[in-house]
Length: 307
Image (cartoon, one colour):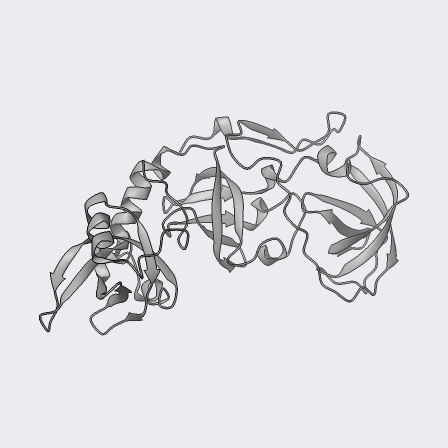
């Protein structure tokens, strides 16, 4: 079975020999090359070995033939690695031989063979393609996008998806559901550890670096890890995203609370914590973030979701 990966992860066809081109046509292998132009005929142009490759607009993305794909979604491929299958040779306007390419066929195959068989709780690899205030869009295979909402990026509160991920970053996510446009909705927080797993990395009496996430009248929430935050004294002079050093005064599993004291508010370098995954493959049926002794319940039951 064809292994389906994110765009920019396939074998490059830019230096294919004629024999390699013919083999790719026969096998239907998904390959990639850099899109060189989006021309006046609304087609992407490539260079494949000694041949020009052309991708008519209807072949540029799944749904382009029905009008559900806008030009901007295609022309932004220019200068970027783009995956496709080579359908065969055709004659160009000047009588030259060209290669006919189809990204849409690669995407349809990816959806039919791979994506349509995924279920809630499945762990998948993805690449962040762009970010909006409400979430990050991620390539889950052949340039097919899924949405990772901001509230699914972590248990800890963040102001922007950019507080957690960056465009071009390879991440692992869990299939959560589908939205009204039938796109996958992803979640990340279930892979970043429970409260107890994160708290086990810290000890009372330590001084560590944290990130201010919100300043309230009753205290300042400071992130110690992507799925763990503690509470320090209120400090209106601080801003969300600001790094600080904090002293860990107490760790209370029964309340899922960490009490902090701000030590240094003048750290110069902005930071973003690395994502440390507890799982990078397989399937999750149920995930419980809360500690057993806590009265507050934070959990995700993937087995109850029907796609």
